[in-house]
Image (cartoon, rainbow, N blue to C red; front, top):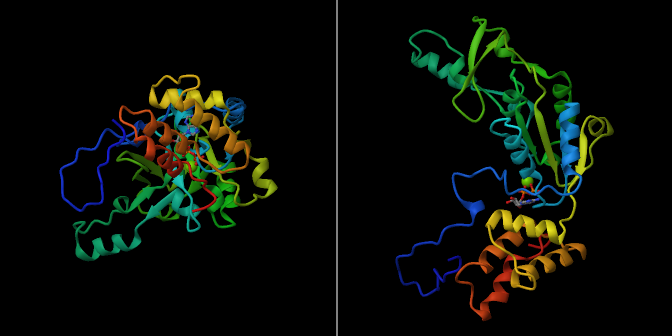
Length: 309
Ligand SMILES: Nc1ncnc2c1ncn2[C@@H]1O[C@H](COP(=O)(O)OP(=O)(O)O)[C@@H](O)[C@H]1O
Ligand SMILES: [Mg+2]
């Protein structure tokens, strides 16, 4: 059951049991490894990035699958969990390398919590990029999401670190102990860092995504493999729907109509995300669907253009 009038607007309290969510809205979130259907040319781009040990820069509109690509690659090549760095205008390179809570350490010293021993380790954690650059047998998978939202200098600073594949944590370089066990990003695992140096032994598999909101310097582009997400075709969308929702799509049926309308609108210049189509199909293909009168209204609600609020 995917459509029920839980809320009717009468203000009368009642017990409700929500139907199961769409598969992509179950929590804890699963990686979309099996469901992702690579658009034409993406496979070659990923392989080029892997061969050449270069970051892959994916450009394309919202909801075109950019952030999902790495989930499939990491799962298929057993690269482990994806490290994620979501960029905003406030993101700094240092934050992505490591975080150090200097104030916390001073407080702990003052309160004598550490029993008179000063230990830096609890106040330091590697960031997503810092963790990706740890030595490893297999490349670590790192998603640098929405890199076009960064401040202007970040891409070149980032490339500098990626060219060298190493960085230093000054606070550890001048610390009294040679080896400090530092907590990694995204878990409780620790890694022993010697004299504050982190050096990768395998260049990480890095996907950077961009909505194309700004241009990058040529020096940055030259060091990446670039791929532009291709507008989905009817047959690719059918495969996506079948993979996500495990349903058959009848020729000439309502789901096929939705898919064709989606492609026609995207080709006509409308900005629509693939997850909007998935949402509409989820609602329309359940055992209870909105009644005839509401149906068209619900589809229009879910398939609204993205360039207008
Ligand atoms: N090629 C695809 N195959 C399967 N699912 C896709 C594909 N492209 C997008 N999706 C689905 O659409 C949703 C949005 O994708 P996302 O990667 O977040 O887009 P973006 O990062 O480009 O905004 C996700 O739920 C994803 O599973
Ligand atoms: Mg994204």
